[in-house]
Image 1 (cartoon, helix red, strand yellow):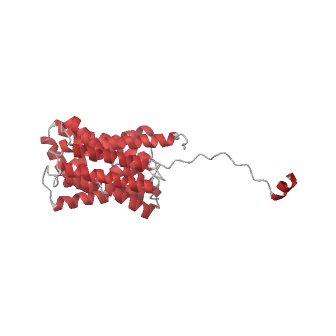
Image 2 (cartoon, rainbow, N blue to C red):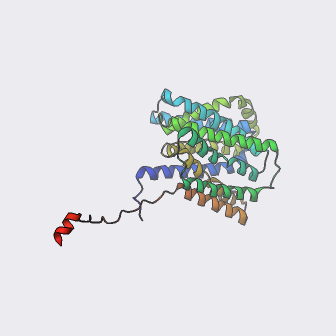
Length: 315
């Protein structure tokens, strides 16, 4: 059994997905810090404005024009659902529930992405993808249970996290067709702009809170806009254009494991054995979901059997 060497586009897509997962994991650490000084809507708007400014400069340097008309529907829907609604609701929900509950509910998102992708985009649901997602979700549940009890939870907070998961799934599925008509940078830039416009009602809160916020909180907000938003959403779109929505959604199950590691290193939050076990399950599930069946090497060709007439002539 052997496989052909991976092609360069496959390696680039895998690298882009890795950058996305690492930066999105780091976002949880920054949100925890910035969220102490900024309200959910103000934090989302500040993050999106930083992202739009960064992406706008990159687009100007690269001379990226406007996306074609055929891409705008997907850009608008993903901008409203994922860049705008998702960020506000998730920030709000994480203030209402403990970290474990939020992790459990939000990680329903990749499952919804796979189901919506199969229903609306015609994506296949191979057994390896389903098995990997099941393993990763079990890991996310383990991580969530091990972290539960660190804070209060409310039904309202659970509903907010569930809405965030649905918005995340809808945004990804809407973004996929747009990437067939526009570049990853265009889709990300104008999706981020749509989200920022949606969050403009929070501008007054942002200005008021920025005046009193510590510098570290504001720097964390800017970091969220430049790296987990501008850079990570662009690398996400690049990878998504080259694979299915379900497979990309399954990749994000590596985020809980990386969050555990980063919280350990950056915040000194030592994880327990159950948390580490859950993180290992998340990574194992991602490995399974991203794997592909090996192509069997054809054996040596058998010589054709002599025809009956030839066999009789040899007698």
